[in-house]
Image: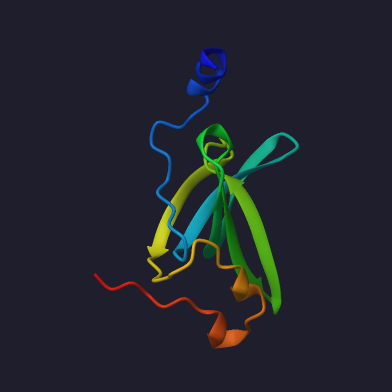
Length: 114
């Protein structure tokens, strides 16, 4: 068990991003195309968080041109440059999979005030 801990300690980010369920976030992802590297921004609502430690991930959902797009990001990945918090959402669930069936304003999460 100690060997696994020692291996993963160097890979963990010192300041992992604080990601809350229901929040709208802007994820800056490094994308490598041949020799070039660029940063692509993916903005959406956090609908799930999974696992813990080195394997911790969060799922972000947005609707793009009428099609729902979900991406799963590892929190400790070096390809995730930064995660910006756009707004906090007020939710009562740990998984917001029910948003997949909702359309338009019904798919929005209320903002947390205070």
